[in-house]
Every structure is written in C-alpha cells, then in structure tokens.
Length: 248
Image 1 (cartoon, helix red, strand yellow):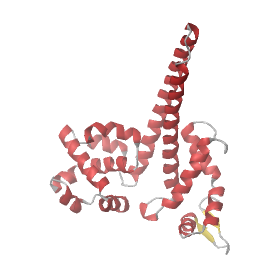
Image 2 (tube, helix red, strand yellow):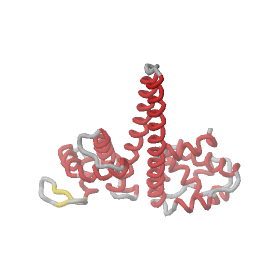
Image 3 (tube, helix red, strand yellow):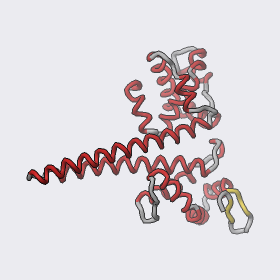
Image 4 (cartoon, rainbow, N blue to C red):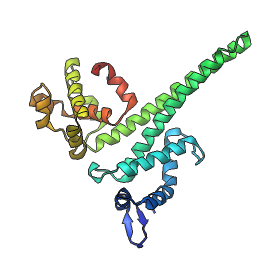
C-alpha cells in the first residue's frame, strides 16, 4: 500500500496526489493516511531510538505529530517524496524530544541528590549520576550521528555530499566567517531562503545586493554557503553548535 491509497471514488492516487487533496481540506482522508502509515512511523522512530517502539510510547506520539506536520508542510517543489520528507521531519522531532527528555532526567537527578545525605546514599547518588552521565553521552553521540545522516540527505537534494563539504570548506577562518555570514543573510531573508529551497541553488545575483562581497567570492564558497544555510534553516541543533561561536 506504500505510495498509493484509495479515495472515495475508488480512483487510485499516488501518495503525493493524496497529500494534495488533504492540503485542500479533506480531513477524513488525512486521518486515513496517518492511520495507514503507522508502521512507517513506528519504524522511523525506532531507527532513532534503537529499540522497538510501541504505539503507547511517547516517542511514537511524537512521530505521529511529526508525520502529520510533514503532510501539511510537504511541497513537490522541494524535490522529495513525501516519505523522504516525513522521515527527516520525524527523526528531527524525535531527536529534539530525546534531547529535552535527557535534560529533564538530569534535573530530576539533581533534585533527588539534595535529599540524599548519608554516606551510602551519597555514594549511590554518585554512581547513578555517573551512569546517567555516561548514558546521556552515548545517547548524544548517537543523536549527533543521526543528525549528520539527515544532513547528508538534505545535501543530496543539492547534488552535494558531506565529504565534499568537508574537503571544500574555506581554509582560512576569515573566509569561513564570511561564508557563514552570507548563509545567515539567506536564512533571514524569506525571498532568498525560498529561492534556495525551491531551486536548489544559491540566488547569487540577489545575494550580491545584500552581501558585501564579490560574486567571485560567493561562487568560490558556494557549496559551503549552501551547507551552512541548510544547517540553520533545518534546525540541526548539534551541527549548529559547531558554528554558533563563529556566527555570534
């Protein structure tokens, strides 16, 4: 059934055609579509959590909400199938949920520790804290790897690879800072960011009006600028941490 679905007149539509009907206001069809893709949602969420996800799990609910979000935001002009687009959205939302949940766990640990005063309790508290700290570290490493995979998929839409970005990033710090500044201009300008998303290339002519650099400089750092713009536009939190200090 993946990729196809029946509607009331029994005509078989592609998944993307079905989404177009939903976006025009067919809410009953929307519920049918979400229900039929529960296995896909569970599989996608499980791939992030590295365990089997049940429909009663909080992570599954996050996945359902994210799948519905992908239906409402999907546009064929983005150059993806709905399922590819939904996979990225679901994984991103689950990663965000896990990150927040990990912070909440640390907070609860701190609160409990305040009430454990005897030596044995303190020793157990330290062991628990070390265990949770190790778990969170491993978990963050996994989430970071997952985010890089999602980022690589986004780059593919622009005909780029992650390795290509690493190899062709500007060698000098000033050049990298300038490229990041150009990317930030794109992100903060709706017209420029829409052009990038739809055309899958830099709006170089328009950028010349906003960025105080030459066309040659923009073209030379084109791939790196695109990569930074994707990181900022798509809310890749871990990757944003790497560039935060430069942009501030």
